[in-house]
Length: 119
Image (cartoon, rainbow, N blue to C red; front, side, top):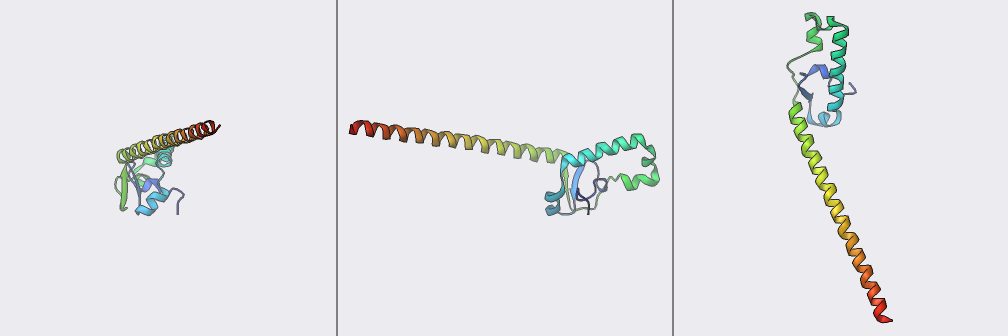
């Protein structure tokens, strides 16, 4: 078990990956994986021996044997689609809220007119 699901160094740095789709949705947090890689870059500057051949295979891989991967570009595309859909939903909700408010105001005006006509 790892708090970020599959250990980031077990996948190529250009993808987010997990063994299956369920775990991918549960564990893959792209910002955290990117943060891990930036931290790794800092470690390699401080301890360049990490990149020696005898450690390199443990720390960096260019392939993965997992079933589900998502490139950074694809993740960004999906995020943009998700953000656009959320924005559309918020706009639709505001539009619906304005429509309800207008209907309520019209109802109040009608009630007021009815009261005035009765007097």
